[in-house]
Image 1 (tube, rainbow, N blue to C red):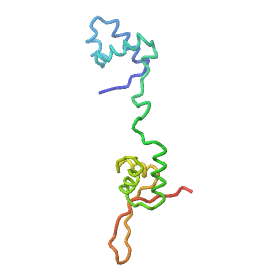
Image 2 (cartoon, rainbow, N blue to C red):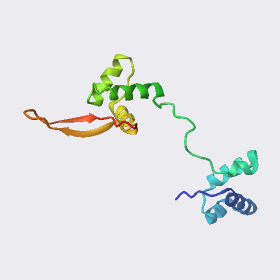
Image 3 (cartoon, rainbow, N blue to C red):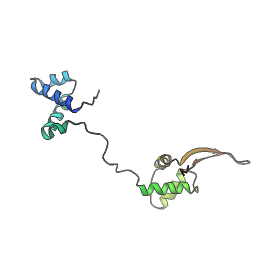
Length: 138
């Protein structure tokens, strides 16, 4: 099981393992793999204590993120109440050469409180579900 060790724990483990004769046995006693030890050692040699600071696994940027311009366009279309379904918004966007999946559009609408499943029943008509309903935050 992976455990996040802080900088001081890593430094102490490195010194104990480095001073031992059998690296694999020392790593086993410390509860880490020998590959982890050698990775920490390499990082320590090149960056000293800075190299032992736990690093975030979160990406620095998201290349596939939908641009703010397109998000604003989707919200504007949804607030116009011209389209009831995300598929209709998708078709409208495709006319402007913007190609997104229906799931992405729904996700954007949910993030902006514009997606809601509502059953509408009118007299003498068949009930239907409308899915786009923007809540104004005025």
